[in-house]
Length: 110
Image (cartoon, rainbow, N blue to C red; front, top):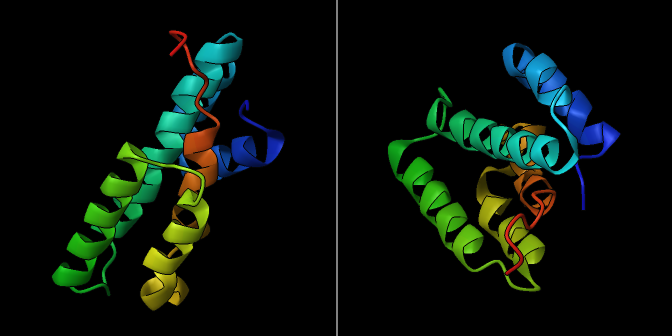
């Protein structure tokens, strides 16, 4: 999967500083860097959230780390379950982290 136009729009709206150099990168490199940037933004939104208690931030960040280490077939469902208690407080970029992570290409043929 590659970085689609919707993801590029989110990237543009959340990371204007990085958007221009990222869209100028060639194919797989653009997808890899754009995907990483969106995932980092999603995580940063949790870390910097002014209304989430520290224990909730820790729960979310540990859950995301676990799911990204071993995504499996049910990653989106597991992420939805993970986010459920805080869903209303989380921005769209965070709620879509699974989709953005899936847009990273396999660069070294695993």
